[in-house]
Image (cartoon, rainbow, N blue to C red; front, side):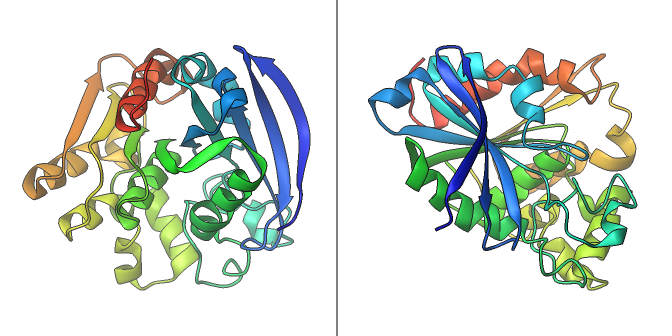
Amino acid sequence: MAPVTTLEEHRCFGGVQGFHEHASTAIGLPMRFGVYLPPQAVEGPCAVLYCLAGLTCNEQTFAIKAGAQQHAARHGLVLVTPDTSPRNTGIAQADADWDFGTAAGFYLDATREPYARHWRMESWLMEELPAVLAARFAVDIARCGVLGHSMGGHGALTLALRHPGRFRSVSAFAPICAPSEVPWGQKALRGYLGDDQAAWLRHDAVRLVENGARAPHLLVDQGSEDPYLATQLRPERLEQACTQAGQPLTLRRHAGYDHGYFFIQGLVGEHLAHHAQGLGLRG
């Protein structure tokens, strides 16, 4: 296993917020990720919450903007913030659009060239990164949850549904619920997977639920003034699918709130409490 390079560390709520890099075998390039170790980590391995960010973001975005560390310190949760795509791939078109390519990995393994070589985000997140974390940090990777925002909300939902039993708790802020039906998702799914729409549906939370996939109780928060609500997010589709399938879902709608981190900051404590309960933690 390649060594982990620590790029920076900061004391934070009695713990340590760090940002790190390693040479990823799955991606074939260096990948960055953040780790917040709560004070309890000095006593032994702690449960892990993967926090998946959205389009245009990186490994620092959620860690800096969400204000989650104070709640993680109370619950004894390790926060892991992965980067959102490979970087410096040498693929010219990867930097052409803000909603596809660099910073827009959609948390899947691409099969279409030229992206198939490096865009292997699902393999990195589900296989390689947990092993890196277990080898280097005080984490209990068997006790983990996943949270995401926007594109990262899509990732949290689909990874939990595609890997039953892997995550004990799941939540999302303003997720892309039905990517095969909306422009952001269609662009990404076609670009990474090609024109076979059957492949798209394997990375669509609504279709996964409709086709029998199940996950722990889903907590989803959505702002009513989110400019992407009607055209890109479609939480009503997830609500409909979960109701019909019997998949537990709490969908909360918040009047006046938009898509950004000011919305997340007000609710992130409740999300971490949801994960702490699912992971059997106190606090």
